[in-house]
Image (cartoon, helix red, strand yellow):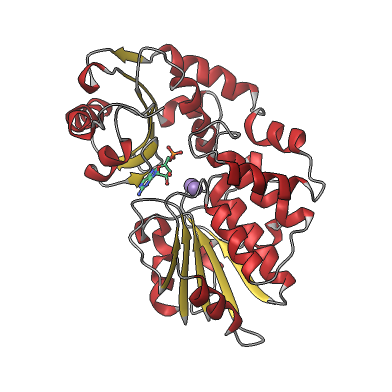
Length: 334
Ligand code: 5GP
Ligand code: MN
Ligand code: MN
């Protein structure tokens, strides 16, 4: 990683240089947490002109509405058109930045912080560590190299990011270094119980009922994925409307589906407002779901990936089935 160039890009900012922070569409805890945590760090360095934003409607999921640094957020429509520096968080490619992708060309400099193996290195300076558990790991290291000490506000953002992408420190990427970072964050006095309840264990009753309905129609296909099993379900805009729920409540659904013992691969196919299907995929290891996702126009990691599909649900799932065989990884390392 090009740490020296990244530090130089930040240090080279003129005193009133405008900085635009961008994260991926439908932001999750890592996207928002690494972006806002880094933004708060830049503010401590004296950066005064700064905005944070993401493509699409400027709606922040309830779970993240108590994040420190939310005052940095502006709607994408109001974001600086030609900032001195643009910094992108947790986005594997320009396509994940939607209508904000043009800023890469109009900004004076473009810095990319990410951890996706499929990252296309679309910045002028790219800090991409595919072994990092979250983008926040990269963000924290850059803050340290810039001489910013952690405070509780920065730490809370980075902790939300780290615990989101490690599934509360349960996934394979949870290395000793991840726990050491978590320890440094907790040492600032943040409260992990409150934070975890907010981001993982809080949802409206309507969403609980919606999950019941959508889980009730899940299908198990033991012969798919060369005998490793596929479990999948789908949710439509009509399902959301009947239960009076916002689309982002469906992000947690994959965590219930992927519990299925008989399936190595799990999918949730979610209808978007435009009628396309946002697909979330998870694997226990026999299949590299990022290969399936990349083949179908998306991206992600070996154990978690996604793409956007067109057509009917059945057509989308057929395309996934067709890619599973080619994405087998061989014996799983445990
Ligand atoms: P999730 O299923 O939680 O939305 O996403 C899982 C992983 O897949 C994340 O690392 C995310 O970056 C990636 N991912 C999800 N949807 C897409 C997509 O449409 N395009 C790309 N390139 N990556 C995606
Ligand atoms: Mn993300
Ligand atoms: Mn991430």
